[in-house]
Each structure stands twice: as structure tokens, then as C-alpha cells.
Length: 438
Image (cartoon, rainbow, N blue to C red):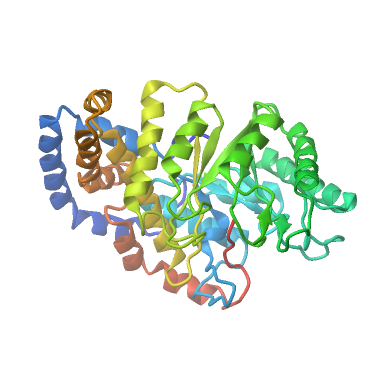
């Protein structure tokens, strides 16, 4: 579950000639911008090369479902060249990894991505990709499934449904063992839509008991991530509705259980960065699903609505990293739904935005910030954060990509390569194979 990048790609889907031409036309300007930024940072006592080195080994996982077009409750409009199966998805993820050099792993969702694990591992190995956390699905019914999850899964009143959901999660663990994954993420849609529909305490107890069985099936070196969501599809009550319930679950289950924070799974105006701090402080921050939102769980591109909030989250993460917080090793993954954009382009930009927030947070003058906090100088404390946030770290990110064999401008290189048109000719239009929202 390390966020650090592994080996370079073994096979390329974007022509190295096209990539080379793309970079050659931009390299001189980049080096000039990098040198100018380096001089500016040097006056602040910051080594630009040290920041670049940290950015270069920072990675974020791609969700397999993210490379397909998403949808809403009303409609889904499939895009050209959509992946037909998990093997097409892996190829699309490989393109993102090649151009950004920031997405070394893929996170699978079962049963959407169910296939022979050995074939999956071989397919990913072609491109030097690894596998991030496994994701189970007990929020919708799979073809041929004996019992329905319409009224819940791990907290269902029927013991048979709960058993089915537990067995599915244990199967996900077994698949992940073969793939080299080291974590299982569990999100459920369980809850109620009417007052009196369920007994809150009994429902939560059933959920905890079922999760204890899943926890017991974890390999010794695995982690279990539980994910909270305020609403949808349950609009009156949700079994795991907030970070407090999530923390209680992780504490009840044991030391291998952690809380996963999805940036969209919060009420508007909730202070997410403070939640992150609390979970770090008590050793239960497992990782993130990065996206953005305006009204609720919108699953928009990371940093597209509130990039400052993303920076503030990373300010807490970098603070923990630099202070050596015990057990601090969060997993980073994107989780988005792309309805009107090319999913590959959105994911490339989102990976860049996550790296950008990390780089900006590394620029915060920690000594000055601590001094201003100690003297209750609110204005200078917030200006210290703003000084880092306002710094254009784009040249650092681009130089890190260039030196690792990626694209100075990933979207421009992707469009020049014509990858979308190529796969559109090879993949028949279909309503299948699209994205999901978790």
C-alpha cells in the first residue's frame, strides 16, 4: 500500500517518438521556468531539487472503474472507445501511468473486474503496474447472485444475506493475495429510507459482527479500510454515516482496521482537514479517495472545485510525515465519476492536482507557522499557508515527469497521440464497462 512509485513501465501504449517530440518542443521553456522557481525558493531557504525528489516518488492509485464513463440517477452517456472489460481498463490505466508517472497501481472492484487473477497480474505486469486495495461490492446485485442486497448486506436482518456478503469479501481477499494487494476497502450502501424501517443499534451490531469475520480473514500483512458515506442510497439513515462511526468501527475491529476518507462523503462545509488530523492523532487514518464536490457526493475531478481544501488536507499529511507520526502510511487513490470529459484526461489532471497539493504543502514554512500559532497571530499563520499555496509548483511536477520518462504536458501528449480515436476503432460502442461510484 505504499504511495511510492515502483519500476518504470515495461511496455508503452503511447509512441515514444510522439512523446519525445512533445517533450522536445517544451523542454527549453520548462527548464527556464524551473530555474526561475528554483531561485525564488532558494531565497526562502528551500531546495527545489529536494521538493522534486519527493514529488517524483509520490503516487496515487487509479480506480479501475474510473476509466469508464460514469453517470447519474437519470442517465449515462457512454463515451467513445470505452473499456469493455478489466483488461481494456488496465490498458487505459497504463496510458495514465506512462504520461503522468504518478499512478503506479490500479485498484480493482469485484465483481465488476472479476477475472482469472493470474491473467490480471500478467496484464498489469506488461506495463509495470501493480495493484492497490481490493474493493468489494455488496451495494448492488451481481448476475446470478442467489440473495439480493436491496435491503442491505453486512447489516441485513437475514443471516443468509449477511453470510453471502461476508463470503464475497473473503473472496476479494483471496483474489488480492494472488495479485499482490495488501488491503481491502469495504463500503456498503446499507441503511434505511424511512423512520422505523430498521433498528439502529441492532443494525450496527450485525454490521460489526459481520466485519469481525472479514477482519479475521485478513492476511497478517494486510489492512482493512472502512469507508463512511453520509447518504445514498439510504437517505434517512446510513449504517456507516460519518467519520465518528467509522472510527468506532476501526477501533472495535482491531489494529489492522483503519478509516478511509473520501473527500466527497461529507456534508457541505465540514472541516475535512480537521477530521484527517483527528484520525492521524489516534492512529486510524488508512487513506483517501480523492475527488471534489460542490453539493454532496458529486465525485468531481480532484481539485476542480476547491483546490485550497485539497492543499489543507495535504498540509495535515505533510505535518504528520515530517513529525514522524507513529504508524503514518496513508494509501492514496482517486475515486471519480466522469460524465462529460474523457476519463483518461480527467484522471491524469486529477493525479497532477494531488501531486500539486503535496508539493505545495512541502513548501509551508513549518517553523514560522508554529511560531505564529504559539503567539496567536491568526493573520500571519494563515498567510504562511497562503504563501505556500500561491506558489506555482507546476515546473516541479513537469520536471519530475520529464526526468522519469513522462510527458511535460500529459493531456497535450495524449491528444497528440490519438489514443482515444485508436481505441474507439477497436472497441465497439457499448453501454457496458462504464464507471461506478463508491
